[in-house]
Length: 139
Image 1 (cartoon, helix red, strand yellow):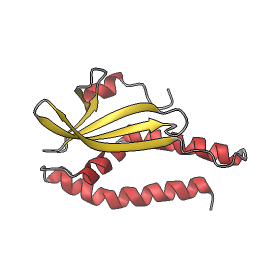
Image 2 (cartoon, rainbow, N blue to C red):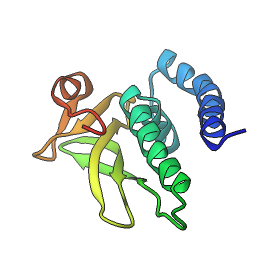
Image 3 (tube, helix red, strand yellow):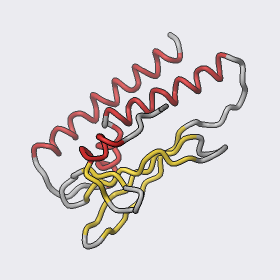
Image 4 (cartoon, rainbow, N blue to C red):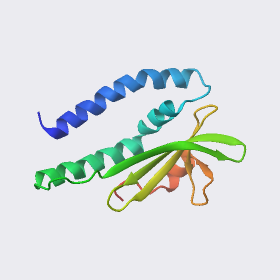
């Protein structure tokens, strides 16, 4: 079994396991915990593409015989207050140990799980609005 196939199988298993809790959250809005917020963000199609591209880069490095290549993606989570609203912030980084570059900060409102993305001014932008202006991963 190749490394890429094992990675895809792992993602599929995680998706199935998380799908149950994500579906329950979507049916019953309410307060969202940090682990739930992270799971919601990691299921976004843009984030899945980002993860796949980063894993492909690691697989390429290994195939070329590079030893001890650092991780090419990182996730940092925490709580933020913007105005009177509280959010769980899920920050995605490329090359976190070599040359950290923030790709996006997804902000999940703690009260209802609605997803926003941090704009250039640090304020939340609705996910649909962000999708219209975003540079796709790897672009």
